[in-house]
Each structure stands twice: as C-alpha cells, then as structure tokens.
Image (cartoon, rainbow, N blue to C red; front, side, top):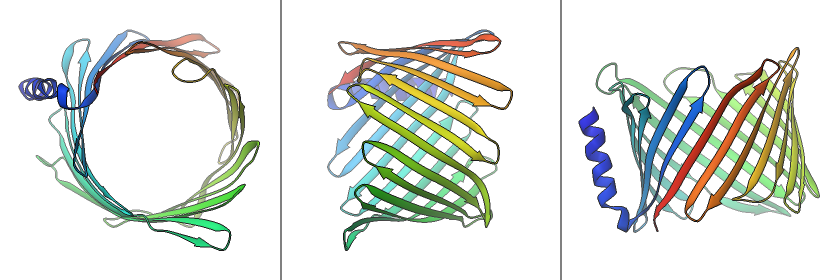
Length: 275
C-alpha cells in the first residue's frame, strides 16, 4: 500500500508542469495531536477533466487515500467515474451519468437533472454493488425560487425527497424539507443577508429536534474571519476560524469551543502548484 501511494505521488509530481494542484497539511490538537497531508492535482485533456488526490496520515506516517476521477462534460450532459483506494486496502469504484436540460415556462427559468449512479464498494473483497437514480428540477422567477429532488436506490433502500423554497432579495429566506419515503425526516428554516464584506445567516432546525446555527463572516476571500455558533436544548458549541493568503500559501487557523472550554484547535496550510 505504501509503495502504491509513493508511486502515485511521484507520478503526480512529475506532471506538475502540465496541471494545477495543491499541496497541503492540517495539524489538529484535541486529546492528542493528529495530522493529515495531501497532494491534489487536476488536468484538462480536451473535454475530459481529470482529478487526483493522495492523502497521508502524519502521526504516524501511513497511507490514507488514493483517489482518481474523470469527468466528461458536454452541453446538458456529463459522464464521470472515480476510483478510491483506502489505506486499509479497500478499493471502491463508481460511475455516473447526468442529463441537465433547461427550459422557460412563462417568466420562470427551469433547470432539470436526471441521473444514474452505480458503484462497487470493496471491490477486492465483499463487492457490494450500489445503484441509485435521481431526478430534480429547479425553477426561478426573481426573487422567488424553488427546487425538488427525488432519489431512489435501485439495490434496496428507501427513496428520499428534498424540497426547497426560497426568496432572494436584499437577503435570503429558504425553507428546507427532507422526506424519507413518505415520512417527514427533517425541516429547517434559513435566513441570511450580506453586504460589503459582512454576511450573516441563521439556520433553524424545526423537526425532529429544535436546534439552531448562526454564522457570521467578516471580510472577503482569501482573508476572512468566520464565527459559527450551534445551539440545541441543553448544549452549545462554537467555532472560530481565520483564513488568509500570503502569495501562493493559504492558511486557516480554527478553534472549537463548548461550555467545557477549548475542544479542538487546528492549523491548515496549503500551497498552490502548477497553473
């Protein structure tokens, strides 16, 4: 497994002059110290986009993930395939196709999605086949919009439906409903607004349990301060992060707090490579 990871990372490094990518690492301090390093690259070969990613655990150093994906995009049509090799030796492959038609209906602009996805998990051992089909449509008539998406597993399971209704004006308001089969699984209300490098939003879960999340962002990318507060009955947690960029080097410093104090802190560094 380590030899495969080393070979793949070496081949990707040789191709840096022909592609774009990112070299990064994230160090986290919780009960102990953990780390993750990665190399991600992307290529364009005509109408085909290729992406690759390799990940290593840093403490101790060991292979975590190898990923390769390919996507062919044409007008209103796309095909994609992925291969994922985990550090445990598990190999997963998947493929998907999607149609994306669009049309006008009076003052409404409509966009549709019709797709099929098939995957094979644990190819080298259990070989668990999975397949699903989905259909979705989104309509927009400024300032109103709405969308509905249904997905049905073809290898056993329960169909799901996602319904979203919204209003985008000076701010935004949206209602999200998620159905599992014919039963309501969750519902939530979202409110937000943004202006001159300051944005805020509030996400209120109405069902099955009342909870809320408030988000405040100051500044514009790449320099941005983000504050997030989550609340539920009898508990709360919050995160604060500062993201910035110095030339090609990007960084993000984050901390997670609860009523017990500091739970986790992390530092993420990433370097842009190639074009």
